[in-house]
Length: 312
Image (cartoon, rainbow, N blue to C red; front, side, top):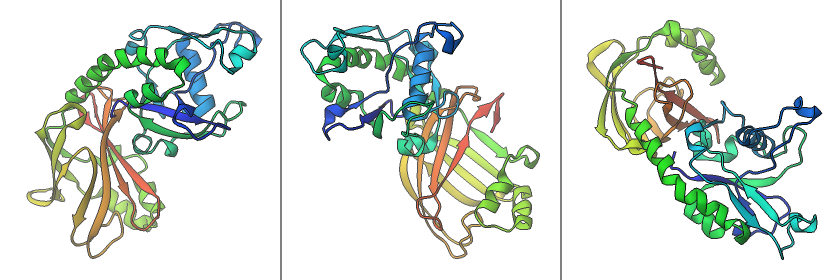
């Protein structure tokens, strides 16, 4: 959501900044294995992203088709290096960019939580670690032979970033919303997973839940929402008032917290972000990640977006 690049550290490489790069690979020509249908650049990028980082298009990430033509292809020369290209008699490669956006709120915070680096699709592992980094850092530290290709992306990225900010601004939750229990999916199952008795989970899922959302500050992917949660369906009694600021924050609460099975209050570690959502009217979702107090390292992702004008 911060318009950073997902990069991986190549396996069996020395620990240095130039060991990091974006996922990449070749475009398959027509052959028996693909039904004699040559890959497009976007299809090859989708396949390589899955093979090298375990990310599936439409789940962990989505392809930004409108941005794929914004970055020109760049040929880079590996002559005089110990690259496998040079060793096999090639002078270099032509790099074409395909741009994806992160769908996972957990992955937006920590990409290791959404990536599988073991090597998927029968391929060997390519990376040993992943991280998000600003494009300027990547350009500065990438292997010099590839720098021109990454500079082309750096030049085109502001247009892509501006489009994203516009989409985030289109996400308007303003109003009072009530939960329709008949449309719930996996709510009871989620409660039970936390250790809550099923009968109590069913009752809680049917309990009236109302909120009012007001925009405190409109600023694209940094937009802040003020959210009032009411006591059941009593819109005169505000049970909790909270500003959803982008980034990490703490929420201190008093009294009972059914969701986290705490009776006497406490503090929650939370983080807000905007990520891609294929089903959203604006293709954007507002997500809040909450660390679950009673489970070390576990976290819950609350995801909200508008679909056909309704809050999902």
